[in-house]
Length: 325
Length: 303
View 1 (cartoon, each protein chain N blue to C red):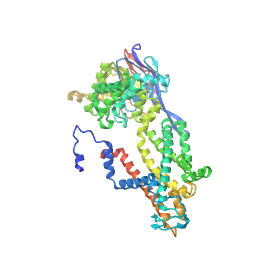
View 2: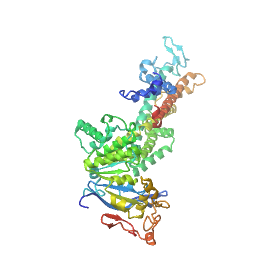
View 3: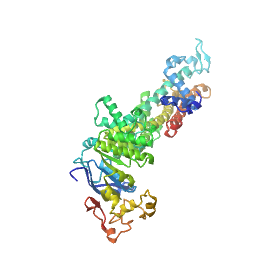
View 4: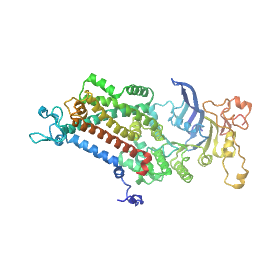
């Protein structure tokens, strides 16, 4: 697996210092991401799910070095991004792009759409001359289902779904290998979500893209992903193929998450056993000792509260961090 | 065009109305804005066309015709519509030439403080850290002195004169811009589109000047309108105190200062200059208010 891996994340951690007092002394740290390791193979879609605040967005940004990691390595196409020089990293960005959650905030309100899409082309010198640039922008707009004649409009003249298409065109402009999709559909109308998901799926097939697809909607992730990683409070708790995860979840947290998905069949839905988690997610500034899920886990033992479980390959290709498996 | 015509859906083939015509329409809808614009246009025309508009030489001293009341006609047949001052100079001509000084000082000082404030505010807000601390502490120190006092102190060292007045007002005025731009940048740099620009691989200075700067213009324009008004008052005040432009140069401030001694017997020396200052400042402020409303994004849909 490591041979074909496009991205290899090893021990990635992002801690945000908590400063307090007059002198702004560091008095603690929010451990948003606390040592996660996984690989993404070329051409696959790795889904990353978890509750709000579990660190999945931070993890995505840290992989692209938009938030600098506190520790760990991110090997992209064989090069460690964490130690790369700023200028080299800037050039590497041509091959890794991002699609953002909020299609309203992620487009500059003062820039015309054609300009927004043309920017990456200019930054990386993809096109030669104005005519080439105009042509490429038009092709990109058509690819994502936008009429190229709208290039001189401003973002506020578009709907949410159209804006997300603009964001996708921008991410595609430099023909990247990897696209980190940070909840690209959660801010959209349900009627639009399927369109965008189908567009992303079509683009992946046509262009051989690799996605890191961050989401909190498990059903959408199941449809899109080759493998799925489940995050809880800054740690990975389970990682396996999409089919395996939904058929045989090993971690109690994953089981609880999956039990919350409604089944579109009234008979089965009535029989569905929900595992209700009690309490809130603990603060990432002060995570519980031992297993981080132990405070809410229905199966937790004394060992779970003291000793942190290792993230290990319980079955071939099925990674899990739980003492009970 | 009736108001209803705007409510009807535009035919698909017609391009959306250009922003300029909407601006004009809303502008005409505000009486205060129109009146202010007319007042400012008169001041501007007076400043630009002073040599042709002034009926008499504003510098010519003729003690024989000193302190004549408005409407006085001298032996050569020249009419002095606003009378003459203590040295026999034509008040109306000095008032017209005075508009020049006021506008030159206000606009030049505005340009200097605007450029300094914009640059320091952008850098301070975007890069933060030590640069931000230094810039903001300088701003705090400067703000702890009243502007006029600071200007007085500097002018006392440098001496008076139009160029020095502009420099002093320009250098003391940057704080307002610096602070508002920094605040805007602090907010805007957290926006996802800035993160998107970084993800694209844009260089830092391009992000700052091409992605962030276009989003800070509207508050800057509004602050500029208010600073312009305060610059006019500051020029008048400093000239009144005798450290602004030299007394022979006609400015509204020096006219007030000169006329002060004769206020009991020749009120026409101070009233025109005082009115000119108040009306101009009031107009700029009203226009600034209107501009602020116009640029408010929450009101954009009403436009």
